[in-house]
Length: 277
Image 1 (tube, helix red, strand yellow):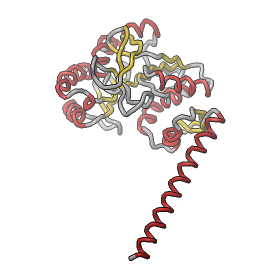
Image 2 (image 1 turned 135 degrees about the vertical axis):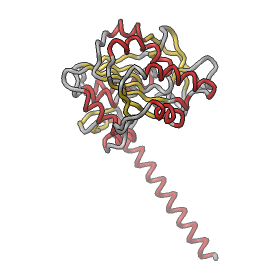
Image 3 (image 1 turned 90 degrees about the vertical axis):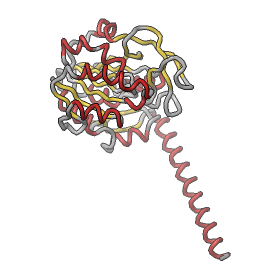
Image 4 (image 1 turned 180 degrees about the vertical axis):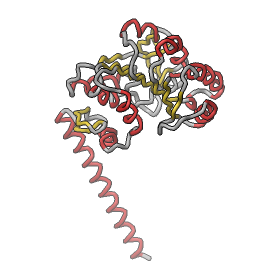
């Protein structure tokens, strides 16, 4: 019995040493690339220099494990004459990819911690065809409050908040869709992607007149479970009214999806839908 206990203690000590060594190695790798000033990654199969503060994420992108279907949709809709609008750009993985195959990219990110890395990634790759905006896009222009989900700013989960909602909040400049159109003049984009952690339920109704007139392809992420439960039915109804503008709807795997199925899936999980006319 004493021998078994001694053996167990040696095993635990070995595991601790391994964990410590692994932690030291990770810190060494981070320090190395931060000293270098960038991390080498492949974004949609294309080599890029990217910020060294999200190494784990960029490895996932390089290995094709992050939103592979999204890259496939961008690859299908974008070409050298295209305009791409990225609403909720975060640190810029899709903006980087789109910039290599589009004439013009507009990217919008309200979280200024993420925006700093977005600018760094654009600068590291010398991109001149990307116009970034550090703004919260919604139904009104003025100061907007954002709430922090998942522990810290810059983590891709910050979102528009109502007064008193959430413990950690910060203010950012906001702009309405109509005012942003006047500012940016994007015309009719080849593709608009919207992924804003629940803010789509405010933004889409504000875009309705524009979408009726232009009908650009729209890649939309739905985050209904992020909303307070008592608001979900009303907000979903308002969004589906706008979605009905489009003749065809497809899920992430490019399978056609009916209106009722879309509503049912949106109630259960975060999901994405591709809308085309």
